[in-house]
Length: 326
Length: 307
Image 1 (cartoon, rainbow over the protein chains, first blue to last red):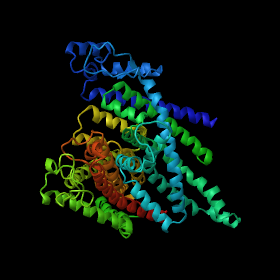
Image 2: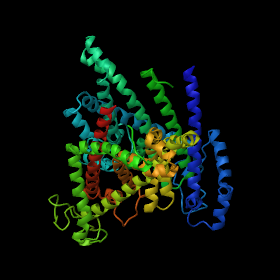
Image 3: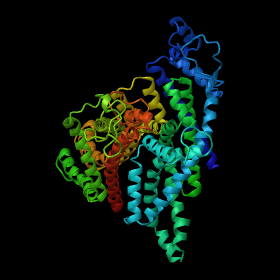
Image 4: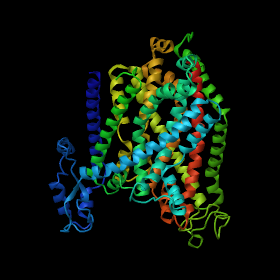
Protein backbone atom coordinates (compact mmCIF):
# COMPACT_ATOMS: atom_id res chain seq x y z
CA UNK A 1 0.00 0.00 0.00
CA UNK A 2 2.82 2.35 0.96
CA UNK A 3 4.54 1.41 -2.25
CA UNK A 4 1.51 2.45 -4.28
CA UNK A 5 1.20 5.78 -2.48
CA UNK A 6 4.92 6.35 -3.02
CA UNK A 7 4.66 5.49 -6.70
CA UNK A 8 1.67 7.77 -7.20
CA UNK A 9 3.37 10.71 -5.49
CA UNK A 10 6.63 10.28 -7.35
CA UNK A 11 4.89 9.85 -10.70
CA UNK A 12 2.96 13.08 -10.20
CA UNK A 13 6.17 14.90 -9.25
CA UNK A 14 7.81 13.35 -12.29
CA UNK A 15 5.05 14.57 -14.59
CA UNK A 16 5.46 18.10 -13.23
CA UNK A 17 9.20 17.92 -13.91
CA UNK A 18 8.72 16.64 -17.44
CA UNK A 19 6.19 19.41 -18.05
CA UNK A 20 8.62 22.06 -16.76
CA UNK A 21 11.43 20.69 -18.92
CA UNK A 22 9.17 20.82 -21.98
CA UNK A 23 8.13 24.40 -21.22
CA UNK A 24 11.72 25.46 -20.64
CA UNK A 25 13.20 23.91 -23.76
CA UNK A 26 10.25 25.01 -25.91
CA UNK A 27 10.57 28.63 -24.77
CA UNK A 28 14.37 28.71 -24.98
CA UNK A 29 14.37 27.40 -28.54
CA UNK A 30 11.93 30.07 -29.65
CA UNK A 31 13.52 32.96 -27.79
CA UNK A 32 17.07 32.48 -29.05
CA UNK A 33 17.80 33.86 -32.52
CA UNK A 34 17.82 31.64 -35.62
CA UNK A 35 14.93 30.77 -37.92
CA UNK A 36 14.51 27.03 -38.52
CA UNK A 37 12.20 27.61 -41.51
CA UNK A 38 15.03 29.27 -43.41
CA UNK A 39 17.07 26.14 -42.80
CA UNK A 40 14.25 23.83 -43.89
CA UNK A 41 13.27 25.64 -47.01
CA UNK A 42 16.82 26.36 -48.07
CA UNK A 43 18.82 29.54 -48.55
CA UNK A 44 17.34 30.22 -51.98
CA UNK A 45 13.69 30.19 -50.95
CA UNK A 46 11.91 33.54 -51.36
CA UNK A 47 10.83 35.41 -48.23
CA UNK A 48 7.12 35.01 -49.05
CA UNK A 49 7.47 31.24 -49.20
CA UNK A 50 9.30 31.22 -45.86
CA UNK A 51 6.42 33.14 -44.31
CA UNK A 52 3.89 30.84 -45.95
CA UNK A 53 5.57 27.68 -44.64
CA UNK A 54 6.07 29.20 -41.20
CA UNK A 55 2.43 30.24 -40.97
CA UNK A 56 1.15 26.90 -42.22
CA UNK A 57 3.27 25.14 -39.61
CA UNK A 58 1.98 27.50 -36.94
CA UNK A 59 5.41 28.91 -36.19
CA UNK A 60 4.18 32.51 -36.20
CA UNK A 61 1.58 32.02 -33.45
CA UNK A 62 2.30 33.21 -29.90
CA UNK A 63 4.69 30.88 -28.04
CA UNK A 64 2.08 29.83 -25.48
CA UNK A 65 -0.37 28.87 -28.23
CA UNK A 66 2.33 26.83 -29.96
CA UNK A 67 3.26 25.21 -26.66
CA UNK A 68 -0.34 24.33 -25.86
CA UNK A 69 -0.81 22.74 -29.27
CA UNK A 70 2.49 20.86 -28.93
CA UNK A 71 1.70 19.51 -25.46
CA UNK A 72 -1.76 18.50 -26.65
CA UNK A 73 -0.08 16.24 -29.19
CA UNK A 74 2.57 15.02 -26.75
CA UNK A 75 -0.12 13.83 -24.34
CA UNK A 76 -1.50 11.71 -27.19
CA UNK A 77 1.96 10.25 -27.76
CA UNK A 78 2.75 12.36 -30.82
CA UNK A 79 6.10 14.13 -30.54
CA UNK A 80 5.71 15.77 -33.94
CA UNK A 81 7.84 15.51 -37.08
CA UNK A 82 11.47 16.33 -37.59
CA UNK A 83 12.11 19.61 -39.43
CA UNK A 84 14.89 18.23 -41.57
CA UNK A 85 14.98 14.46 -41.51
CA UNK A 86 12.98 12.54 -44.13
CA UNK A 87 11.27 9.31 -43.17
CA UNK A 88 12.83 7.18 -45.90
CA UNK A 89 16.43 7.97 -45.07
CA UNK A 90 17.16 9.72 -48.38
CA UNK A 91 19.07 13.00 -48.57
CA UNK A 92 17.62 15.77 -46.45
CA UNK A 93 17.55 18.21 -49.33
CA UNK A 94 18.59 21.72 -48.51
CA UNK A 95 19.17 24.20 -51.27
CA UNK A 96 16.06 23.54 -53.33
CA UNK A 97 12.80 24.50 -51.70
CA UNK A 98 10.53 22.88 -54.29
CA UNK A 99 12.31 19.54 -54.63
CA UNK A 100 9.56 17.04 -55.39
CA UNK A 101 11.69 14.06 -54.35
CA UNK A 102 11.71 15.30 -50.79
CA UNK A 103 9.58 12.82 -48.96
CA UNK A 104 7.58 12.76 -45.83
CA UNK A 105 9.40 14.09 -42.75
CA UNK A 106 10.41 11.52 -40.16
CA UNK A 107 8.44 11.19 -36.93
CA UNK A 108 10.40 12.36 -33.89
CA UNK A 109 9.16 9.43 -31.80
CA UNK A 110 10.40 6.94 -34.42
CA UNK A 111 13.83 8.58 -34.57
CA UNK A 112 14.17 8.51 -30.79
CA UNK A 113 12.97 4.95 -30.27
CA UNK A 114 15.13 3.65 -33.11
CA UNK A 115 18.29 5.02 -31.48
CA UNK A 116 17.37 4.53 -27.82
CA UNK A 117 18.15 0.75 -27.70
CA UNK A 118 21.66 1.45 -29.00
CA UNK A 119 22.28 3.94 -26.23
CA UNK A 120 20.80 1.61 -23.61
CA UNK A 121 23.16 -1.13 -24.81
CA UNK A 122 26.08 1.30 -24.49
CA UNK A 123 24.90 2.36 -21.03
CA UNK A 124 24.55 -1.26 -19.87
CA UNK A 125 28.05 -2.24 -21.00
CA UNK A 126 29.40 0.96 -19.41
CA UNK A 127 27.71 0.16 -16.11
CA UNK A 128 29.08 -3.38 -16.03
CA UNK A 129 32.66 -2.23 -16.74
CA UNK A 130 32.46 0.71 -14.32
CA UNK A 131 30.88 -1.29 -11.49
CA UNK A 132 33.33 -4.20 -11.74
CA UNK A 133 36.34 -1.89 -11.87
CA UNK A 134 35.12 0.51 -9.16
CA UNK A 135 34.10 -2.29 -6.83
CA UNK A 136 37.54 -3.88 -6.97
CA UNK A 137 39.41 -0.60 -6.44
CA UNK A 138 36.87 1.00 -4.11
CA UNK A 139 36.21 -1.95 -1.77
CA UNK A 140 39.94 -2.66 -1.49
CA UNK A 141 40.52 1.01 -0.64
CA UNK A 142 37.67 1.12 1.86
CA UNK A 143 38.91 -1.98 3.68
CA UNK A 144 42.37 -0.47 4.16
CA UNK A 145 41.94 3.22 5.02
CA UNK A 146 45.23 5.11 5.00
CA UNK A 147 47.18 2.20 3.49
CA UNK A 148 48.24 1.64 -0.10
CA UNK A 149 44.94 0.34 -1.57
CA UNK A 150 43.32 3.53 -0.26
CA UNK A 151 46.03 5.65 -1.88
CA UNK A 152 45.70 3.73 -5.16
CA UNK A 153 41.96 4.44 -5.09
CA UNK A 154 42.64 8.12 -4.41
CA UNK A 155 45.14 8.58 -7.24
CA UNK A 156 43.26 6.42 -9.75
CA UNK A 157 40.07 8.39 -9.19
CA UNK A 158 41.91 11.74 -9.32
CA UNK A 159 43.54 10.86 -12.62
CA UNK A 160 40.45 9.28 -14.20
CA UNK A 161 38.31 12.28 -13.37
CA UNK A 162 40.91 14.47 -15.08
CA UNK A 163 40.77 12.71 -18.44
CA UNK A 164 38.52 14.66 -20.82
CA UNK A 165 36.21 12.06 -22.37
CA UNK A 166 36.48 13.28 -25.97
CA UNK A 167 40.29 13.32 -25.80
CA UNK A 168 40.40 9.87 -24.22
CA UNK A 169 38.09 8.61 -26.95
CA UNK A 170 40.40 9.90 -29.66
CA UNK A 171 43.53 8.53 -27.97
CA UNK A 172 42.00 5.08 -27.35
CA UNK A 173 40.69 4.90 -30.90
CA UNK A 174 44.13 5.84 -32.22
CA UNK A 175 45.84 3.28 -29.99
CA UNK A 176 43.53 0.26 -29.99
CA UNK A 177 41.87 0.68 -33.34
CA UNK A 178 44.39 2.30 -35.68
CA UNK A 179 47.74 1.10 -34.28
CA UNK A 180 46.96 -2.20 -32.58
CA UNK A 181 43.85 -3.11 -34.55
CA UNK A 182 42.29 -4.87 -31.55
CA UNK A 183 38.89 -3.20 -31.52
CA UNK A 184 36.77 -1.41 -34.08
CA UNK A 185 35.98 2.21 -33.30
CA UNK A 186 33.90 4.10 -35.85
CA UNK A 187 30.23 3.46 -36.54
CA UNK A 188 28.32 0.35 -35.51
CA UNK A 189 28.51 -3.08 -37.03
CA UNK A 190 28.20 -5.54 -34.18
CA UNK A 191 28.72 -5.70 -30.43
CA UNK A 192 32.50 -5.11 -30.59
CA UNK A 193 31.78 -1.51 -31.60
CA UNK A 194 30.25 -0.88 -28.17
CA UNK A 195 33.37 -1.76 -26.19
CA UNK A 196 35.67 1.24 -26.78
CA UNK A 197 32.93 3.87 -26.25
CA UNK A 198 31.84 1.99 -23.12
CA UNK A 199 35.40 2.00 -21.75
CA UNK A 200 35.61 5.77 -22.22
CA UNK A 201 32.29 6.27 -20.43
CA UNK A 202 33.29 3.85 -17.67
CA UNK A 203 36.49 5.82 -17.05
CA UNK A 204 34.35 8.92 -16.69
CA UNK A 205 31.87 7.25 -14.35
CA UNK A 206 34.32 5.32 -12.12
CA UNK A 207 35.90 8.11 -10.01
CA UNK A 208 32.71 9.06 -8.17
CA UNK A 209 31.80 5.40 -7.72
CA UNK A 210 35.25 4.61 -6.32
CA UNK A 211 35.17 7.56 -3.91
CA UNK A 212 31.70 6.74 -2.67
CA UNK A 213 32.59 3.08 -2.20
CA UNK A 214 35.81 3.87 -0.32
CA UNK A 215 34.08 6.18 2.12
CA UNK A 216 30.94 4.07 2.58
CA UNK A 217 32.83 0.77 2.96
CA UNK A 218 35.30 2.26 5.44
CA UNK A 219 32.50 3.83 7.50
CA UNK A 220 30.51 0.56 7.46
CA UNK A 221 33.56 -1.36 8.68
CA UNK A 222 33.71 0.96 11.69
CA UNK A 223 30.11 0.13 12.68
CA UNK A 224 29.42 -1.93 15.76
CA UNK A 225 27.75 -4.77 13.84
CA UNK A 226 31.11 -5.60 12.29
CA UNK A 227 32.72 -6.11 15.71
CA UNK A 228 29.64 -8.04 16.84
CA UNK A 229 30.01 -10.24 13.78
CA UNK A 230 33.56 -11.04 14.79
CA UNK A 231 32.44 -11.90 18.31
CA UNK A 232 29.76 -14.14 16.84
CA UNK A 233 32.56 -15.95 15.07
CA UNK A 234 31.72 -14.96 11.51
CA UNK A 235 34.58 -14.97 9.05
CA UNK A 236 35.98 -11.67 7.80
CA UNK A 237 34.97 -12.44 4.22
CA UNK A 238 31.41 -13.18 5.27
CA UNK A 239 31.12 -9.96 7.29
CA UNK A 240 32.41 -7.91 4.38
CA UNK A 241 30.43 -9.62 1.63
CA UNK A 242 27.10 -10.22 3.39
CA UNK A 243 26.85 -7.25 5.71
CA UNK A 244 29.18 -4.36 5.01
CA UNK A 245 28.90 -4.39 1.21
CA UNK A 246 25.17 -4.68 1.36
CA UNK A 247 24.91 -1.54 3.43
CA UNK A 248 27.63 0.23 1.48
CA UNK A 249 25.79 -0.35 -1.78
CA UNK A 250 22.90 1.97 -0.87
CA UNK A 251 24.82 5.25 -1.30
CA UNK A 252 26.26 3.83 -4.52
CA UNK A 253 22.79 3.16 -5.86
CA UNK A 254 21.57 6.66 -5.01
CA UNK A 255 24.64 8.04 -6.69
CA UNK A 256 23.88 6.14 -9.90
CA UNK A 257 20.50 7.85 -10.07
CA UNK A 258 22.07 11.28 -9.74
CA UNK A 259 24.90 10.44 -12.11
CA UNK A 260 22.52 9.65 -14.94
CA UNK A 261 22.35 13.29 -15.90
CA UNK A 262 26.11 13.75 -16.14
CA UNK A 263 26.49 10.37 -17.83
CA UNK A 264 24.13 11.66 -20.49
CA UNK A 265 26.62 14.42 -21.31
CA UNK A 266 29.31 11.78 -21.71
CA UNK A 267 27.06 9.66 -23.91
CA UNK A 268 26.45 12.56 -26.27
CA UNK A 269 30.12 13.35 -26.74
CA UNK A 270 31.30 9.73 -26.89
CA UNK A 271 28.68 8.75 -29.47
CA UNK A 272 29.74 11.79 -31.48
CA UNK A 273 33.43 10.77 -31.37
CA UNK A 274 32.81 7.13 -32.25
CA UNK A 275 29.96 7.88 -34.67
CA UNK A 276 27.89 5.46 -32.60
CA UNK A 277 24.29 5.60 -33.87
CA UNK A 278 22.51 6.23 -30.56
CA UNK A 279 20.48 8.93 -28.91
CA UNK A 280 23.56 11.07 -28.21
CA UNK A 281 24.55 11.31 -31.85
CA UNK A 282 20.93 12.06 -32.71
CA UNK A 283 20.96 14.89 -30.15
CA UNK A 284 24.14 16.47 -31.47
CA UNK A 285 22.88 16.34 -35.03
CA UNK A 286 19.51 17.73 -34.01
CA UNK A 287 21.22 20.69 -32.34
CA UNK A 288 23.60 21.31 -35.23
CA UNK A 289 20.67 21.19 -37.68
CA UNK A 290 18.38 23.26 -35.45
CA UNK A 291 15.81 20.51 -35.61
CA UNK A 292 13.55 21.98 -32.91
CA UNK A 293 10.91 19.20 -32.70
CA UNK A 294 13.65 16.60 -32.41
CA UNK A 295 15.51 18.54 -29.66
CA UNK A 296 12.24 18.97 -27.73
CA UNK A 297 11.35 15.31 -28.12
CA UNK A 298 14.77 14.20 -26.88
CA UNK A 299 14.62 16.56 -23.89
CA UNK A 300 11.18 15.25 -22.93
CA UNK A 301 12.08 11.57 -23.35
CA UNK A 302 15.38 11.90 -21.46
CA UNK A 303 13.81 13.76 -18.55
CA UNK A 304 11.09 11.10 -18.39
CA UNK A 305 13.77 8.39 -18.33
CA UNK A 306 15.56 10.33 -15.61
CA UNK A 307 12.41 10.44 -13.50
CA UNK A 308 11.79 6.71 -13.95
CA UNK A 309 15.39 5.79 -13.13
CA UNK A 310 15.29 7.78 -9.91
CA UNK A 311 12.04 6.14 -8.85
CA UNK A 312 13.48 2.68 -9.58
CA UNK A 313 16.66 3.56 -7.66
CA UNK A 314 14.64 4.55 -4.59
CA UNK A 315 12.55 1.38 -4.81
CA UNK A 316 15.63 -0.84 -5.05
CA UNK A 317 17.34 1.06 -2.23
CA UNK A 318 14.42 0.41 0.12
CA UNK A 319 14.49 -3.26 -0.86
CA UNK A 320 18.17 -3.50 0.08
CA UNK A 321 17.80 -1.43 3.24
CA UNK A 322 14.24 -1.75 4.67
CA UNK A 323 14.96 1.03 7.22
CA UNK A 324 14.72 3.61 4.44
CA UNK A 325 11.30 5.15 4.06
CA UNK A 326 9.50 5.75 0.84
CA UNK B 1 29.35 27.60 21.83
CA UNK B 2 28.52 30.77 23.69
CA UNK B 3 29.69 34.15 22.58
CA UNK B 4 29.63 36.92 25.15
CA UNK B 5 29.97 40.35 23.65
CA UNK B 6 28.43 43.76 24.01
CA UNK B 7 27.45 44.40 20.39
CA UNK B 8 26.21 42.06 17.68
CA UNK B 9 29.08 42.89 15.36
CA UNK B 10 31.69 42.23 18.03
CA UNK B 11 30.01 38.89 18.63
CA UNK B 12 30.27 38.25 14.94
CA UNK B 13 33.97 39.00 14.98
CA UNK B 14 34.56 36.52 17.80
CA UNK B 15 32.47 33.88 16.16
CA UNK B 16 34.28 34.35 12.89
CA UNK B 17 37.51 33.52 14.70
CA UNK B 18 36.01 30.39 16.18
CA UNK B 19 34.68 29.20 12.86
CA UNK B 20 37.73 30.15 10.86
CA UNK B 21 39.70 27.62 12.77
CA UNK B 22 37.89 24.77 10.98
CA UNK B 23 38.76 25.80 7.41
CA UNK B 24 42.29 26.48 8.62
CA UNK B 25 42.56 23.05 10.18
CA UNK B 26 41.23 21.48 6.99
CA UNK B 27 43.77 23.41 4.98
CA UNK B 28 46.62 22.49 7.32
CA UNK B 29 45.77 18.83 7.22
CA UNK B 30 45.36 18.79 3.43
CA UNK B 31 48.58 20.69 2.76
CA UNK B 32 50.57 18.01 4.57
CA UNK B 33 49.52 15.30 2.09
CA UNK B 34 51.56 14.20 -0.90
CA UNK B 35 48.62 14.52 -3.29
CA UNK B 36 48.08 18.16 -2.34
CA UNK B 37 51.76 19.00 -2.82
CA UNK B 38 51.95 17.27 -6.19
CA UNK B 39 48.79 19.07 -7.26
CA UNK B 40 49.97 22.53 -6.17
CA UNK B 41 53.44 22.12 -7.74
CA UNK B 42 52.01 20.86 -11.01
CA UNK B 43 49.49 23.67 -11.08
CA UNK B 44 52.12 26.34 -10.40
CA UNK B 45 54.37 25.04 -13.19
CA UNK B 46 51.48 25.02 -15.67
CA UNK B 47 50.23 28.42 -14.51
CA UNK B 48 53.66 30.05 -14.83
CA UNK B 49 54.08 28.51 -18.28
CA UNK B 50 50.65 29.72 -19.38
CA UNK B 51 51.25 33.22 -18.03
CA UNK B 52 54.78 33.77 -19.31
CA UNK B 53 55.70 31.44 -22.20
CA UNK B 54 53.37 32.90 -24.85
CA UNK B 55 54.67 36.40 -24.00
CA UNK B 56 58.39 35.52 -23.71
CA UNK B 57 58.51 33.38 -26.83
CA UNK B 58 56.74 36.14 -28.74
CA UNK B 59 54.97 33.58 -30.92
CA UNK B 60 51.48 34.56 -32.06
CA UNK B 61 49.15 31.57 -31.51
CA UNK B 62 47.25 32.43 -34.69
CA UNK B 63 50.29 33.09 -36.91
CA UNK B 64 50.46 30.74 -39.88
CA UNK B 65 53.72 29.49 -41.33
CA UNK B 66 53.22 27.21 -44.31
CA UNK B 67 56.91 26.23 -44.49
CA UNK B 68 56.78 24.94 -40.92
CA UNK B 69 53.52 23.03 -41.16
CA UNK B 70 52.91 19.64 -39.50
CA UNK B 71 56.23 19.57 -37.63
CA UNK B 72 56.31 16.82 -34.98
CA UNK B 73 57.14 17.46 -31.30
CA UNK B 74 60.84 17.26 -30.34
CA UNK B 75 62.43 13.80 -30.68
CA UNK B 76 59.17 12.34 -32.00
CA UNK B 77 59.59 12.26 -35.77
CA UNK B 78 61.52 13.75 -38.66
CA UNK B 79 62.31 17.49 -38.96
CA UNK B 80 61.49 18.45 -35.40
CA UNK B 81 62.95 21.68 -34.08
CA UNK B 82 63.38 23.43 -30.73
CA UNK B 83 61.57 26.44 -32.18
CA UNK B 84 58.35 24.42 -31.86
CA UNK B 85 58.79 22.06 -28.87
CA UNK B 86 55.35 20.50 -29.30
CA UNK B 87 55.36 20.71 -33.08
CA UNK B 88 53.02 22.65 -35.34
CA UNK B 89 49.56 22.12 -36.79
CA UNK B 90 48.35 21.86 -40.38
CA UNK B 91 49.01 25.53 -41.11
CA UNK B 92 52.23 25.87 -39.11
CA UNK B 93 50.88 27.34 -35.88
CA UNK B 94 52.93 26.55 -32.77
CA UNK B 95 51.22 23.86 -30.71
CA UNK B 96 52.82 24.77 -27.37
CA UNK B 97 51.73 28.41 -27.52
CA UNK B 98 48.28 27.41 -28.73
CA UNK B 99 47.88 24.91 -25.89
CA UNK B 100 49.01 27.44 -23.29
CA UNK B 101 46.71 30.16 -24.59
CA UNK B 102 43.94 27.56 -24.60
CA UNK B 103 44.80 26.83 -20.99
CA UNK B 104 44.34 30.51 -20.09
CA UNK B 105 40.86 30.64 -21.62
CA UNK B 106 39.85 27.31 -20.17
CA UNK B 107 40.95 28.17 -16.63
CA UNK B 108 39.47 31.68 -16.64
CA UNK B 109 36.14 30.45 -18.01
CA UNK B 110 36.21 27.62 -15.44
CA UNK B 111 36.78 29.99 -12.54
CA UNK B 112 34.26 32.54 -13.80
CA UNK B 113 31.53 29.95 -14.24
CA UNK B 114 32.18 28.51 -10.77
CA UNK B 115 31.84 32.08 -9.44
CA UNK B 116 28.46 32.38 -11.18
CA UNK B 117 27.41 28.98 -9.78
CA UNK B 118 28.50 29.98 -6.27
CA UNK B 119 26.74 33.33 -6.47
CA UNK B 120 23.41 31.86 -7.62
CA UNK B 121 23.58 28.75 -5.43
CA UNK B 122 24.67 30.53 -2.26
CA UNK B 123 22.21 33.39 -2.69
CA UNK B 124 19.23 31.07 -3.18
CA UNK B 125 20.42 28.64 -0.51
CA UNK B 126 20.93 31.40 2.05
CA UNK B 127 17.55 32.97 1.40
CA UNK B 128 15.83 29.57 1.57
CA UNK B 129 17.60 28.59 4.78
CA UNK B 130 17.26 31.95 6.49
CA UNK B 131 13.59 32.64 5.84
CA UNK B 132 12.35 29.05 5.74
CA UNK B 133 8.62 28.44 5.27
CA UNK B 134 7.09 29.03 1.88
CA UNK B 135 10.17 30.78 0.45
CA UNK B 136 12.19 27.71 1.32
CA UNK B 137 9.66 25.34 -0.24
CA UNK B 138 9.51 27.25 -3.52
CA UNK B 139 13.29 27.56 -3.85
CA UNK B 140 13.87 23.91 -3.00
CA UNK B 141 11.27 22.77 -5.54
CA UNK B 142 13.09 24.78 -8.22
CA UNK B 143 16.33 23.18 -7.07
CA UNK B 144 14.88 19.67 -7.32
CA UNK B 145 13.49 20.37 -10.76
CA UNK B 146 16.81 21.75 -11.96
CA UNK B 147 18.61 18.60 -10.79
CA UNK B 148 16.27 16.49 -12.90
CA UNK B 149 16.74 18.48 -16.09
CA UNK B 150 19.15 17.13 -18.68
CA UNK B 151 21.26 20.32 -18.55
CA UNK B 152 23.66 19.21 -21.25
CA UNK B 153 20.83 19.15 -23.79
CA UNK B 154 19.68 22.61 -22.77
CA UNK B 155 23.25 23.92 -22.82
CA UNK B 156 24.16 22.67 -26.27
CA UNK B 157 20.74 23.64 -27.65
CA UNK B 158 21.04 27.23 -26.46
CA UNK B 159 24.66 27.63 -27.55
CA UNK B 160 24.05 25.75 -30.80
CA UNK B 161 21.08 27.85 -31.83
CA UNK B 162 22.47 31.22 -30.72
CA UNK B 163 26.04 32.43 -31.18
CA UNK B 164 28.41 31.20 -28.47
CA UNK B 165 30.12 34.21 -26.89
CA UNK B 166 32.33 34.02 -23.80
CA UNK B 167 29.70 35.53 -21.43
CA UNK B 168 27.06 33.15 -22.83
CA UNK B 169 29.36 30.17 -22.26
CA UNK B 170 30.13 31.26 -18.69
CA UNK B 171 26.44 31.74 -17.98
CA UNK B 172 25.43 28.36 -19.41
CA UNK B 173 28.18 26.58 -17.46
CA UNK B 174 27.39 28.57 -14.33
CA UNK B 175 23.71 27.66 -14.47
CA UNK B 176 24.43 23.94 -14.63
CA UNK B 177 25.55 23.14 -11.09
CA UNK B 178 24.13 25.73 -8.67
CA UNK B 179 21.56 23.42 -6.98
CA UNK B 180 24.41 21.56 -5.25
CA UNK B 181 25.56 24.78 -3.57
CA UNK B 182 22.03 25.92 -2.83
CA UNK B 183 21.47 22.71 -0.89
CA UNK B 184 24.70 22.91 1.10
CA UNK B 185 24.20 26.60 1.91
CA UNK B 186 20.57 26.09 2.91
CA UNK B 187 21.39 23.35 5.38
CA UNK B 188 24.19 25.27 7.10
CA UNK B 189 22.23 28.53 7.21
CA UNK B 190 19.27 26.68 8.73
CA UNK B 191 21.41 25.56 11.65
CA UNK B 192 23.18 28.91 11.99
CA UNK B 193 20.09 31.10 12.02
CA UNK B 194 19.02 29.70 15.38
CA UNK B 195 22.38 30.35 16.99
CA UNK B 196 22.84 32.98 19.70
CA UNK B 197 24.81 35.47 17.72
CA UNK B 198 22.22 35.69 14.95
CA UNK B 199 19.51 36.13 17.58
CA UNK B 200 21.64 38.78 19.26
CA UNK B 201 22.06 40.62 16.00
CA UNK B 202 18.30 40.42 15.33
CA UNK B 203 17.49 41.74 18.82
CA UNK B 204 20.15 44.41 18.36
CA UNK B 205 18.17 45.67 15.37
CA UNK B 206 20.33 44.52 12.45
CA UNK B 207 18.42 44.05 9.22
CA UNK B 208 18.20 40.60 7.64
CA UNK B 209 20.34 41.70 4.72
CA UNK B 210 23.02 42.95 7.10
CA UNK B 211 22.98 39.71 9.08
CA UNK B 212 23.26 37.64 5.93
CA UNK B 213 26.01 39.68 4.35
CA UNK B 214 28.04 40.61 7.42
CA UNK B 215 27.62 37.52 9.58
CA UNK B 216 26.52 34.45 7.68
CA UNK B 217 28.20 34.70 4.30
CA UNK B 218 31.73 35.45 5.60
CA UNK B 219 31.36 32.57 8.03
CA UNK B 220 29.88 29.92 5.77
CA UNK B 221 31.50 30.64 2.44
CA UNK B 222 35.08 29.42 3.09
CA UNK B 223 34.21 25.72 3.62
CA UNK B 224 32.11 25.81 0.46
CA UNK B 225 35.03 27.24 -1.49
CA UNK B 226 36.92 24.01 -0.78
CA UNK B 227 34.16 22.07 -2.52
CA UNK B 228 34.19 24.43 -5.47
CA UNK B 229 37.83 23.65 -6.31
CA UNK B 230 36.72 20.34 -7.82
CA UNK B 231 34.03 22.18 -9.74
CA UNK B 232 36.59 24.36 -11.53
CA UNK B 233 38.01 21.20 -13.09
CA UNK B 234 34.53 19.97 -14.00
CA UNK B 235 33.70 23.28 -15.68
CA UNK B 236 36.97 23.21 -17.62
CA UNK B 237 36.07 19.80 -19.02
CA UNK B 238 32.61 21.08 -19.90
CA UNK B 239 34.13 24.13 -21.60
CA UNK B 240 36.46 21.97 -23.66
CA UNK B 241 33.56 19.71 -24.66
CA UNK B 242 31.64 22.74 -25.91
CA UNK B 243 34.73 23.88 -27.81
CA UNK B 244 35.15 20.43 -29.31
CA UNK B 245 31.57 20.49 -30.58
CA UNK B 246 32.16 23.93 -32.09
CA UNK B 247 29.91 25.53 -29.48
CA UNK B 248 32.66 27.11 -27.37
CA UNK B 249 34.93 30.10 -27.89
CA UNK B 250 35.19 30.45 -31.65
CA UNK B 251 38.37 30.08 -33.75
CA UNK B 252 40.87 31.58 -34.44
CA UNK B 253 41.10 31.92 -30.64
CA UNK B 254 42.69 28.63 -29.59
CA UNK B 255 40.92 26.56 -26.93
CA UNK B 256 41.58 22.95 -25.98
CA UNK B 257 38.28 21.92 -27.51
CA UNK B 258 38.67 23.56 -30.90
CA UNK B 259 42.35 22.57 -31.29
CA UNK B 260 41.48 18.93 -30.61
CA UNK B 261 38.49 19.07 -32.95
CA UNK B 262 40.79 20.48 -35.65
CA UNK B 263 43.51 17.94 -35.02
CA UNK B 264 41.07 15.07 -35.28
CA UNK B 265 41.07 15.55 -39.06
CA UNK B 266 44.85 15.00 -39.17
CA UNK B 267 44.93 12.16 -36.67
CA UNK B 268 46.61 9.62 -38.94
CA UNK B 269 49.54 11.70 -40.21
CA UNK B 270 49.90 14.24 -37.37
CA UNK B 271 48.74 12.57 -34.15
CA UNK B 272 50.19 15.31 -31.93
CA UNK B 273 47.70 18.02 -32.92
CA UNK B 274 44.77 16.26 -31.28
CA UNK B 275 46.65 14.55 -28.45
CA UNK B 276 49.11 17.16 -27.11
CA UNK B 277 46.54 19.80 -26.02
CA UNK B 278 44.67 17.00 -24.25
CA UNK B 279 47.82 16.13 -22.29
CA UNK B 280 48.00 19.76 -21.13
CA UNK B 281 44.33 19.82 -20.25
CA UNK B 282 44.63 16.47 -18.47
CA UNK B 283 47.65 17.63 -16.43
CA UNK B 284 45.90 20.86 -15.43
CA UNK B 285 42.78 18.99 -14.41
CA UNK B 286 44.83 16.42 -12.50
CA UNK B 287 46.56 19.18 -10.54
CA UNK B 288 43.25 20.86 -9.67
CA UNK B 289 41.57 17.57 -8.82
CA UNK B 290 44.43 16.45 -6.57
CA UNK B 291 44.20 19.71 -4.61
CA UNK B 292 40.40 19.59 -4.47
CA UNK B 293 40.23 15.93 -3.49
CA UNK B 294 42.89 16.38 -0.78
CA UNK B 295 40.91 19.28 0.69
CA UNK B 296 37.73 17.25 0.57
CA UNK B 297 39.34 14.26 2.28
CA UNK B 298 40.80 16.49 4.98
CA UNK B 299 37.42 18.11 5.54
CA UNK B 300 35.64 14.77 5.76
CA UNK B 301 38.17 13.38 8.23
CA UNK B 302 37.94 16.48 10.44
CA UNK B 303 34.15 16.58 10.37
CA UNK B 304 34.04 12.82 10.83
CA UNK B 305 36.31 13.11 13.85
CA UNK B 306 34.06 15.70 15.45
CA UNK B 307 30.76 14.01 14.85
